[in-house]
Image 1 (tube, rainbow, N blue to C red):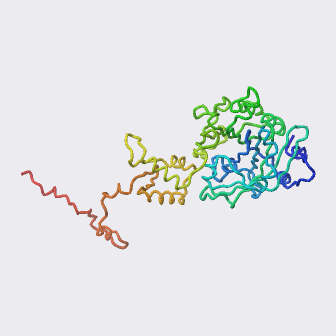
Image 2: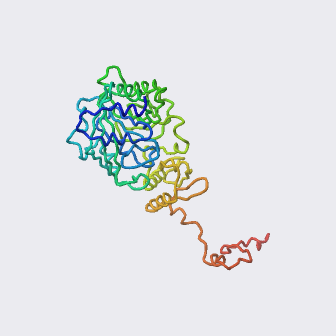
Image 3: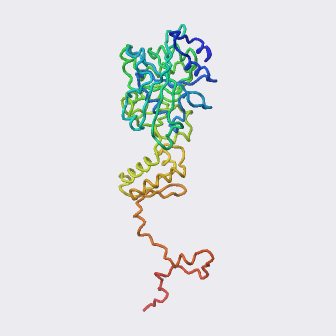
Length: 388
């Protein structure tokens, strides 16, 4: 079955609801990839993190913006009874009280549930789908600034267990899971006997790789990690791309499938790229840190390492200028060389000899230095010495 089959099999729960959101899905020219958040509750953090220049280089499907890229549809599900009607009538058109408040405050962001909500059931699949929109506003500037004042996301929510959704929808219609987030799992694990969501769910997804392919990115909190590696055995070949994020049982980390993450993207080592000001502050912290048996000492850093710290594939002139401005406020400077850069205090260069004005005058335009003499401020008189 294909995308058209899926759309044709969606039947409205009532005859009084609109169909604008379903029409938005129907307008997609290609079958979308899925960002799946099993056991999501009401958590909308993935929408918050969906900013330009994020490490995956992918953006979730927004109905207020056009894009030539393949759509990535955000799909939530939860097995809890209290969420079977989410989002409830009293939430429509209202700003949602968000979970993980510190993350939302860091981006000065808000989430507002749209006024439109459509509920459908999939024929012969025992799965219901609720379509609704979420408007995300944030005030962050720089490389993470959204193109518009806000983004309006189309969200799918299913009140069912994850295994049912996986097999009856994603596998049945050959949906490719591009991203799966395993964050603060537990409710589902408690309700389903002998199921470890962090280990067993990746195993179940991997069994259907012939139908849906391999997941490109997994995000998992500390309960799904073994050291810095994923705890699930089937994910051990995935590459650690970035963290640390205070999401779920922190830290949450991002892992990428080998081959789907290019060398250029791999330079980005954090779940969120840094602003120039944040990068400058990080360089100052490194300056103060003890390594090579010294601390508070000038150091050199490669261009690729600086990109990794910044979380971006390359450093633009504008970005570098902002780093310099921030460093100067604390008396630091960043010296750019071909193969590396040097971070030092500006005062370190105070003792360096200064060019006297008379030397400058010799090299003014139109003035030639015929005698080739060097600075004789400290002349060498050794030729006058005798053996006496």
